[in-house]
Image (tube, rainbow, N blue to C red; front, side):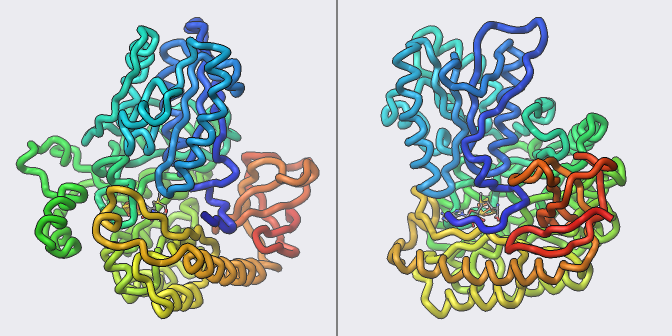
Length: 509
Ligand code: SAM
Ligand code: SF4
């Protein structure tokens, strides 16, 4: 994987393997210490906070030292093969801890747990508990089962679970930015992607609980929330009869349910998806954005991830209307070629994507756009790769996450298409997109020299305690000298004097 200039933290390389530390709930200490380490996307980091909250209620105290722990959890990612390899390597480190403390419980949570299920217990003898992303409420029982001498597995996926009532504890955050999950799962079935298999069907969270959580964060001093979902633009909530309340037979056939049918019949996936799409009235993502924006003009709102097929003009006008909704959209393209996009089952073409970019530029001209790209997808030709490069020239993204295609077992692409692009070609194409992105990022930042940016101060800069660091509305990291009249959690106007390839440098005015 190659992440370049990624200040939005949706997949923050510097946080991989981070341990979560919470304060104990007073008078409720069961004497056992929990160590929890997270990998992958922001959703996983957010889930670890939910897990820690569930176990804190049962008297567990978190520790940042795994050698002192009674329970070790590792919250895993399956998105690419190297993400899984990283987790397996990390598990080796826990072997010594288990030898020293035979009562130690080692658990695997998240996407890899869901993908491998009980096979994990056979493959990694060290592991006692395997728990999928929808089964975290069951953790106290599962730990009890292990205490009783058994191995424990719960990988049931749910159509309802959103953990809406669990208020995640966030004590190892900076107290300024927080992730708020607004939906779970994904119904899109991009052919390369394992997420629909590991996180299940898409379901939206009750908007009142989202607004309540964001209000509570604001009252505690937080000044930025990032609303999280795999496809935030398809957020929908209908209070009288939410989808989840329909009987099995009434539900539209979506996502994974279509996979077997498509594989058996050879029918066109995209056409079938269109036929089964349903119009749902109720709270849309645009409405939700507005509800959160109205909490306070002092609360900044970001969101991730937008899907090119679902992002509406309504959403764009809502972003434009509120100063506190950041002018920044992460809009993954994956490939700039329509044939490859069809194989990827992205359900849009190059032209459709360009139309959405044109809409963003027309409605919110100052909006920064970032993206995700995959190089060397099955059968991608040199010309098709050139289409990705020319799309980059067309959009001039501010940032990008760039990956080589990694075949994932069970996905539509793994079942249907040969992973036929040699590693060396995938890598060379990746280097080409990375080089181009570096140029564009630098070009974008250079244009901001001489402008004034409103920055939310997040803390000291990585390099020096003489400087503060924060992000602009458009999500670029801005570094400037520490001063007496401002502190983290406050907004300042920074005049930009210069830039590096990834950072703006300036002074408060
Ligand atoms: N839901 C988001 C979307 O559709 O844009 C992204 C979710 S995924 C966790 C993040 C990114 O990982 C994707 O946008 C894609 O670029 C990349 N990705 C997913 N599966 C991959 C695979 N099999 N090989 C390489 N990259 C992959
Ligand atoms: Fe994966 Fe596509 Fe869903 Fe994103 S939208 S999580 S890439 S299936």
